[in-house]
Amino acid sequence: MAEDVLLLGVHLSTSKGIKGLFEEARRLKINVFQFFLGSPRVWKNKKLSEKERELFLKEKNSYLFIAVHAPYLLNFASFSEDLYRRSIKRAIDDIEEMNKIGIKYYIFHPGTNSDISGGIKKIRYAIKEILDMTKDVFLIIENTSGERNDIGKNLIEIKEIIDGFETRIGICLDTCHLFASGIDLRNNIFVHKLYEDLRELGLNKLLKVFHANDSRYPLGQGKDRHTHIGEGCMENNGFKNLFSHDFFKKLPFIIETPKENEMDVVNLARLRKIWALTI
Image (tube, rainbow, N blue to C red; front, side, top):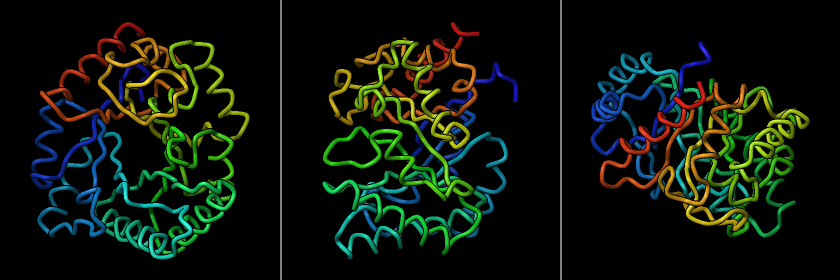
């Protein structure tokens, strides 16, 4: 793929069905996106009709990267057996629907537990069970801000979680979460260090996608609060540095900022303008 192609999109809603999802993708002129299979705040996932599956299979080849994002309810690190089992079941149900429409990437938050070591063990057991029970999917682990005992707030924890699963797992880095956990993307030195840290841990080739979000809170506050591009504490330099990096700039960037006042259009325009400064 040509290096001067920006892979940019947003999190899209399925509230108007699969037809509406692709209509919005075309309206926004994006080439990548992610979506939920149903509401992210209920346990039951969306079962696509045969007509919806046919439409999705017809339309999806026009896009360079599509992922399903797991609902926020899931907690693979939980010591609650009920929550743990429900989380695994929902992931498996989602992946079975994904198989029907040829989507390979399932992005998930690792989970929350005050016992980091114990939580990581639970996440690893969950990953193994999900991979054993499914096929044709990459589980994409997303870094966290470290808020409320979230696990996965740094590359060391991510490495511990995915060690041994590399053939069917990938990584998503959220810019807001990186900033919240103390990585100052505004400074090019830290962007290059991020890549070197990924490379030294053997994680660089597993990085599949960025979530492109500004941070409402200052550097290192551990707060997972997304805000619009250029309106938070990360400033445009954070994105400019990522777009200027030979490796990072080739990856998809998906915006997850609040859905208000046509801000998807505004945020896309802002990132396209920043990208244009780097080529």
